[in-house]
Image (cartoon, rainbow, N blue to C red):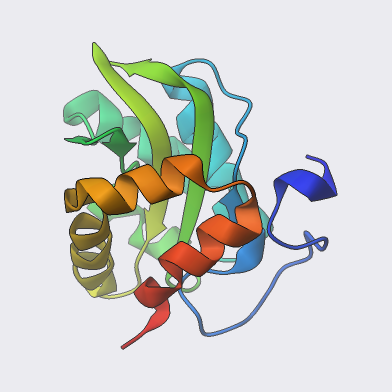
Length: 160
């Protein structure tokens, strides 16, 4: 990943209490398949110190049991309940793709990786659902010129 593709130059683990961090927002993902996108979103969670690497395996397990496609170009890959011990802190990763990715026959431009301690994932899912249910908001995210601009548009998910 080049610095221009991330919302921050550092890829070091960030122990911030914010759910969404600039380092976890990528404006130009490189995946071209569903599985690559799940791995890309999961790897951001690992790199930020939010989850252990085995959490990504549970993201694939979840996808095998039920599609995480949500509509409006959005998929929200996340781990299974069995993977809770792999979550170190609640976090989000957001990757936008220049071209739609085939997600079980549905077009995805945003893969939002979610890791939630306790039941925080439900609150996180709710906030993401609100943002992506607004077609104008989705269009602003599609039109955003950089990861920084995307982060600014999505920063409301950090509000209590």
